[in-house]
Amino acid sequence: MGSGVEEGPGAIPHGGDLGAARRLFPEAPEPWIDLSTGINPVPYPLPPFEASALHRLPSPDDLGRLKAAAADAYGAPDADHVAAAPGTQILIETLPRLVPKSHVAVVGPTYAEHAAAWTRGGHAVEVVPDLAGAAGAGVVVAVSPNNPDGRIFSSCDLRRAVAPGGLVVLDQAFADLEEMPPAAPAPGLVVLRSFGKTFGLAGLRLGFALAEPALARRLEAALGPWAVSGPAIAAGVIALPDAGWRREAAAARGHDAARLDRMILRAGGRVIGGTRLFRTATFDDGPGLFRRLGEAGLYVRRFPERPNDLRFGLPLDKAAWCRLSRVLK
Image (tube, rainbow, N blue to C red; front, side):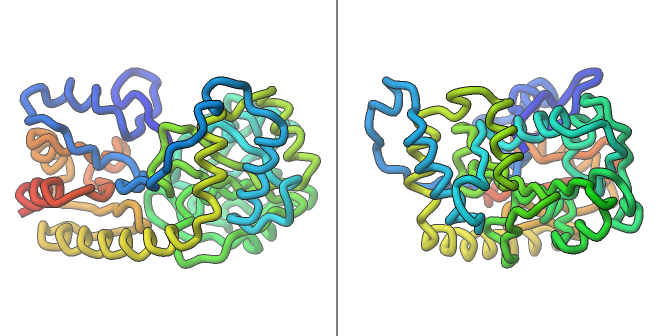
C-alpha cells in the first residue's frame, strides 16, 4: 500500500520509490519501469470533472454522494457504514488510536504498516503465521487477499479467532478484481478498501473503512473536516458505480497475471502467490535477479527478510513486457 523510502535506517521498505531505484542503479536505462507496486497499471479513464472540485471545499453533500457510491460498490448497508479517507494508509494509522490498548495479532507476513501502526499506538503486537496463532487476541488484523502471498481469509473465520468483544480489521485492498464476495461491516469488524489500487489512481489518495456507524463516525472525526479532496470525491463518484469497467479490468489483469506466471516459470522461479495485480515468486538467486532487473531499468519489490522472494507488478505495455522478458530469459 502506498509508496515510501526503500532504503534507510528504521524505514519500512515499500514499492513505488523510483528515486531509490535510481540511486541503487544509476546506470540503468530510462525510462524506468516500475513493477514494485500492486497498482493497476491501466488506470480508469476519468472524464474531465468540474473545475469547482478544485476551487471550493468539498461539501457534506459531496462527501455523502461519495460514501453512498462506496456503500453500493463494496456491499455496505448504507453510507452511514462508510468512512472516507485520503487513502487506506491513514485509516491503518488512525484505528489503533481509537481502540483501548490490547493484544493485537497480525496475520503475516503481510503489509508491514499494520503491525507498525498498532505498535506506535501502544498496543502489544504479535505477528502470527495463521489464525490459530491469533486465537484469543483482542484485535486480529488480516489482509485478504494477502500481500504478498495472496492468502484469503474469511470474515467469519477471523471473527471466530478474536476474543469476545474484540475487533477484527480486514484489509481488502486487493479484493476488488478477485473472485471473492465482499465482506460487509458488522459489529466488531472493520473492512478497509482501496480505491487507488483497483482504479490505477493511487495518487488521488482515496480509501474507505466499512464499519458500524458509530465507529465510522469516530474515524471521520479523527481525520478532521475535508479529509478527502474535491478531485478525489469527484473521481470516486464517477468510477465506483462502473461495475462493467471493474469486470473488464478483472478479466484483463487476470490474463496479464497468467502471462507473468509463465514468464516467471520459464526463468526458473516458483510462483508462491499473489493477486490479479501482482505475483510473488521465489528464485534460487533472488538478489542476483533483483540486481539484473535493476540494471535493466526494471524495479521489483524485494523482501530483506526473504531475499530470494521477489514481487512483480504488471507491466503496462508491449515495451515493458518485452524488457521484462529479455531479463527473465
